[in-house]
Length: 436
Image (cartoon, rainbow, N blue to C red; front, top):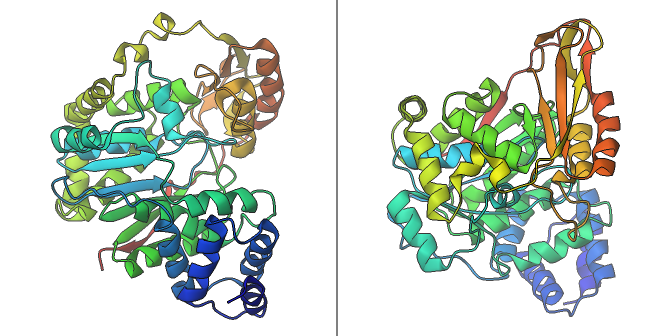
């Protein structure tokens, strides 16, 4: 078998067999197939697509390219949740304690950020003392006793994906549904959960910009899960505007805590309750309606917030940072921008707001960049809310004045006052997949 034959076959629009896909992944991981041939195959896939069977088999092979996490020592049905990312997307911080407070088991491995979308692990690391690396025994014990643990992905989880993604990132082959789906789902399959709930975001603050594209991606990932014996459901959620009012690592942790206390933005609460209900349903805790009621009760009773605090404490986090960040971090520089006229708060491009936050230190342009956990943006009103001239519109935070000013220039162009109220948008566009 030769790599050039696989390239020619896919370039002709033909499906690759499992044996051919195995040859490709094994050879690339072993360093026996050069980058230029892999790039050629990725471009052929990008242009000619893959069949559902091809995509499922590629995903399974990538998942088995490294260690497979064994979660059998955790009692009950293990349901993992993954988001394709977005600006202000702090859903895991809210959904995981909600589910655990209702008796579900959340054993989650998450990643760090690269670019405008923040990573869950970066957000958790903004909490002083929080340990993102736990040994397997402590990880399992935490889930069995508390119902919840979130740790960073280990280096040997789906290493083929890391190698392939590094090439996709520099060869204009990112925007391929089978390659995106296999990247996400290979890590999920390797992480050991029984079932998956996916949040596929769509809009200017997400990777996928149109609802039909998001639906196609959601259907592909749900089908991969089904073909690999892992029931999968996906909610398609709106990311055309930032989720909530706060963007940035510690800022988003604080907003997640506010949501769990029943004091947070309603868009975050709505999306998180639906995701939590799906996780509980997939974990066989009742019908969707019953699971939604359980999640709402856990939120209203304070049980979910108590679970959140217990989770942070269990992994070494100092929970008083939620109210007293000045105990641990220098106060960031803050600039408040006021409305220049009466109207309605609106956002032009969510991705640009995320980029501005990244420029101020809340994200990474390269893997080597340091994170400023205090940096970010806070909207002083919800999108569509009426504002008066002189009223605070948004606040920008950063430790570095030069970075702060660079981000401000972009923020002023993308957080604006509209003369007319912006059209309301749904938070959820639909659901794909399930237990069937």
